[in-house]
Length: 175
Image 1 (tube, one colour):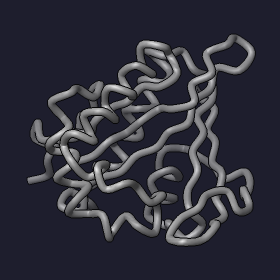
Image 2 (cartoon, one colour):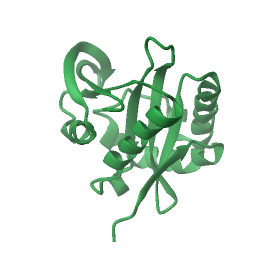
Image 3 (cartoon, helix red, strand yellow):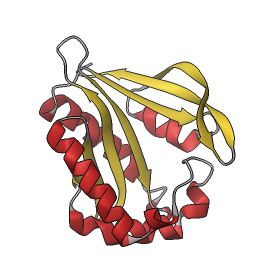
């Protein structure tokens, strides 16, 4: 039986399950994410990170969510870089799903739900995302959610001991 996917705003109690996923999946995520200090992988480090995310949420610059399957935290979906000004109204979507829950449609469902939050709750007009050029699974998630690539950001992010290019994605919301 396929479990359903939900998203909700992150909470302080999510620190321990997120840390457990991040410890287990550190090597699997290494090619796609920047290096992190050791405390990032602890419940205390995640608790501080969640506090910062919730402060950003109160300031209106981020919508930090967790992805749930069967009421268990299995990942995160975040709308960051929110620009709510009437002439901009955009945000950037980022997401990850724990290895134990991958290949079940959760990432695609979570991004779809985040797009609904961006439109209905945040009143945004444009969704953006970026992927590593080699991250084909993430690119499939974005394509399935109506994103199209629009450019390459050269040497955009330092990953796995080197500068990597990023593929830039966009979707106009409400279309």
